[in-house]
Amino acid sequence: MKKSYLFYIFFIVLALVLSGFPKRDAQARPQHQITSPYQLIDAVNGLRISYGLAPLPSHPILMQSAQAQADYMASSGQVTHSRPGGITYTQQLISLGFPLAGDLSLGGFRAENIVNTFGPMTWDGVPPAWQDAEHMNTMLSGNFTHIGAGISQSGDSYYYAVDTAAATGSGQQQSSASTVLTSVPGGASESAGVSQFMVPVTLSTARPDGNVYHKVQYGQSLWSIAIAYGTTIKNIQALNNLGEDSIVYQGQDLLVVTGATPAATLLPESTATLAATITLAPTSTLASSTSMPVQEVTSTATEESTETTGSTNSSRILVVILIIAAMVGAGMAVWLIRDPKGE
Image 1 (cartoon, rainbow, N blue to C red):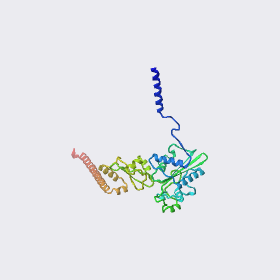
Image 2 (image 1 turned 90 degrees about the vertical axis):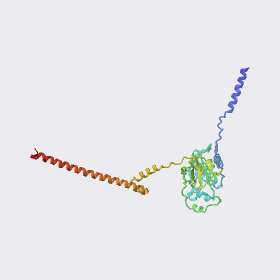
Image 3 (image 1 turned 90 degrees about the horizontal axis):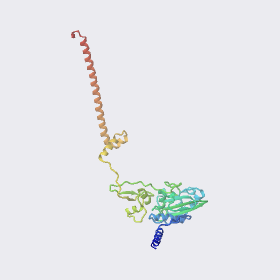
Image 4 (image 1 turned 180 degrees about the vertical axis):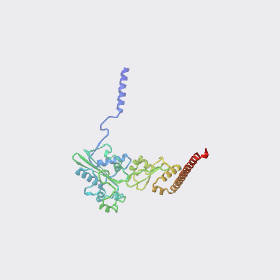
C-alpha cells in the first residue's frame, strides 16, 4: 500500500510540473497578415508604443498620398518614391493641401517607407527591409505628427506604403509652399530608398566633465540621435527633463551621454615637438601657419649650415698646407742627398 501511495504521489507531482511548462503552440505568437491600410497603421503605432512613443493619428491627405503611391507601384511594377507626372512627394502633399512643416526647399518634414512582398505582408516584427536606422526613423521619429498608409495588389505581389509627416503648428500652409509647387525641391531623394532628408548625426566629443552634448540638426529626431550615440530615447528624455515629449528642434542642445571619457589633450612637450615637426616640413603653407617657430628653426638651421661650411673650408686649407710642406721637405731631402759636401 505504501508503494502504491508513493506511485500516485509521483504521478501527481509529475503532472503538476509538466503543467507548469509553456505549451509549444505555433499560434502562441500571433502573426498578423497586413491586408488593409489601417492594419498597417496599427502595426506601426504598436511599434511606437513599444518604444514609449505616442501613436500617430491618421490624416486623410497622407492616406490619399500613400494609397496613390501603392497603386502607382502596383500598376508600374516598380518600387519607387517617384510620383506620376514627375512631381515629388513634397509637391504632392502640398498640392493636396497638407500644411507641411520644415524647410520646404529641402522637402519638408515628411518620410515614406515602401516595400513589395510576394503574398500579404506578415507582421511579426519590423519587416527586414525597414530595420535600418532611416526606415525606422520614418516610423519612430517624434518630429512627425500624422501617418497614412496604402496597400495595392497586382497578382501575387503586394505593394505597401507608409507616409508620415509633420503639420505646421498653425495648420496653415507655409508662405513658400506656392514656390515649391513650381520648382523641384532639392536634397531629398525620390528614387528607391528612404524618401526623407535628414542631416547625418555627427558624434560630439565629451567635455572635461564627461558630458556629451549634441546640437540637433535638420530632420534629426530623438530616435536617430539615440541610435548614433548608443543610448535610448528614454535616457535622453530623462537627462534633459523632457518628460514624455519626443519632439526636438533644430539647434537644440541635448545632453545625450554622461560620464564619458574626455578627449585626450596634448602635453606642452608634445605640442612643442609637434610644432617643430610641422615647421621642418618644406611646405610654404605650413611655414606661414606657424610663422614664429619657423623663423626660429630656420635661423638655427642656417647657423648650423654656416658652421659646417666654415669647418669644411678650414680643413681644405690645412690639407693644402700639409701637402706643400711635404713637398718642400721632400725637395730639401733630395738636395742634401745630392750635395757632395754632405758626404
